[in-house]
Amino acid sequence: MTQDKNVIAFNKKQDINTEPLKVLIVNIGKHYFGGIINSIQDVIQRIPTTPIPHAPENIVGLLNLRGHIVTEIDVAKTLGLQNASEKEEGYAVVTSENGEMFSFVFEGIGDVIDITADQIEILPDTVNPDWQNYTKGVYRMDKKLVIILDFTALIHHLTPEKENIL
Image (cartoon, rainbow, N blue to C red; front, side, top):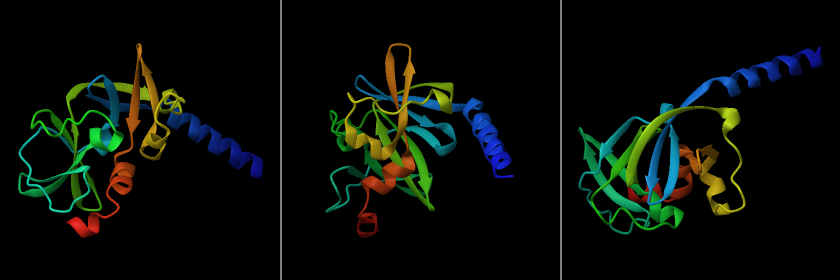
């Protein structure tokens, strides 16, 4: 009986791995990232933010998006890349977590692609090991590596003091 349960679980896992995931490709400079579409509420051109005094440096500020207060996170600064948020250009990917909205700053927005979960690999040793905490892995797209971001993990990992700043 236990063996049958294992077979059923294996078959379910196999079904999940072959079901396509829609992934939005974004970039910061020459670095490519992906966000799974079902975790994204909106993609917008950046709008002005209001700085938050004493906020962690990866928090750009607050913005008003159609009547909702949204916390904007600087992904470049968080990942130790060239800082894109100081320019008020670019795009923001908007998500929500526990009723709060967050936007993540990127320089560019690309296509939406279909991939399967089994095409997502663990991060290679050449990628900053600290990124393991807030990524789902990496996808090989042509000759580029696309780091698949976990927006929920980014929110929890990057804003541990969010209760103090909101």
